Image (tube, rainbow over all chains, first blue to last red; front, side, top):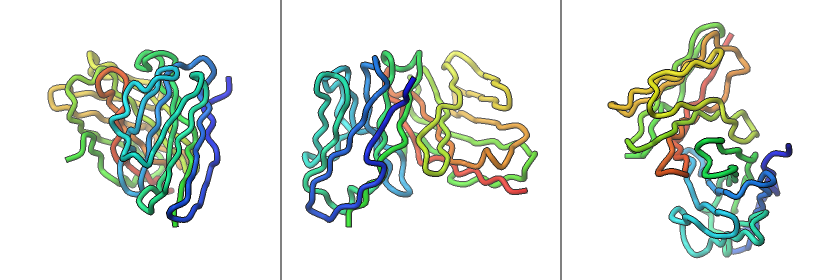
Length: 115
Length: 110
């Protein structure tokens, strides 16, 4: 079974540019989560999709971040325009149901550097 | 304070036991996970404990839960250099969302 795939693995962009991160969950996993780790800080929850619907987006920092999950398959996280404080590692995870009984599988993350 | 707190670093000698401690704030957490992150890799689920358990053993790993004090620990027996990584405890917030702290960097030296 393929795991959770994220790309790109690294991205370096200039302040003010736009970046789109992509996450391909495990096939059949309805639940998809985005997290972010800023250097030296905790891994912070951003949002949770159930299929194509946003179940919980309480962790999204501001309206420069837009997450989508068209058709309930892969998800994208767009940052527009990027700011320096957006730098960090963005993780995606998926789970079969609500997750608690089956666990959450994480991708390797996308390291975003805004210069 | 943060919802999940761990010491940032732990250094042990190869062959010794490592104990990584975690305190959390959400007393309603039903599942509490331990994840491991090796350099350049994603988060790998190590083990978990259900909130009605006090202890869970899985090969070299022992998880202890003190629900009253909201304290979770992970003991790694016979620690090896390959165990060097960042370890995150992640209690479930509500029913669906694992909540992470800053993680503990475990350094194993010969």
